[in-house]
Image (cartoon, rainbow, N blue to C red; front, side, top):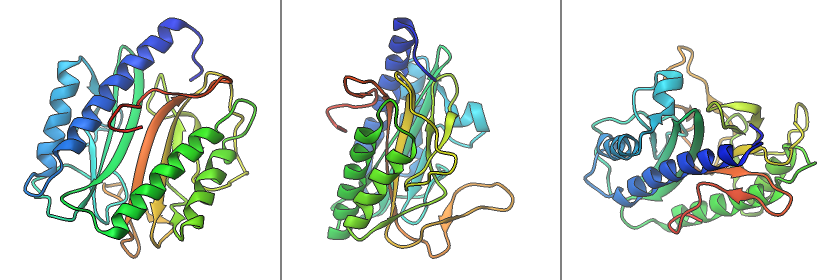
Length: 253
């Protein structure tokens, strides 16, 4: 989506505020003893209280209000009665719509005290996210985002998932550009335009570079060797004077 009016911008800001609120409340609630279903219920309440609709449910008939991926789950983790344990790595990914506008965001936290590896991967994934956001400039191509993300990963002895991507967003959950890779993929890279809305996300891996697609199209997603993946995501409006991070908060910026 390319924002053309102040009304469109305000509606994008509103739905982005809601998904960021749900994300931060869920992340703050991650602790040993809580279930992923409990976390999803927090998301449900925030969305309902603010007149928003779960995008995974409405767009893909996903069995949860949000995606909650624990440890070796790369993405699209289904909320359940799984009890989170001390040291679990938990990613909360919240996407929603209101008044015909969509926003998407996610962050990874550790239940209890993270070990040094978890701290480092979260640091690198966060730094890679902001490097990717900085690289998203009008007149450049989407491959510049992936190049910046990949550079940050390899500088710190990690890699990225090659077949999970960021995407355009706005009037639908997934719009052009449909594939914002986490590496410098030039084939099919699209031009970034002024006021384009992008969901930029990082998938930093400590081993595998590819997820294994489920033949039956089911959730969740894993790598062959069950590598740890750390994901962060913001919805961003690309502007010449500096990108506007719609899902930024005091808790996640």
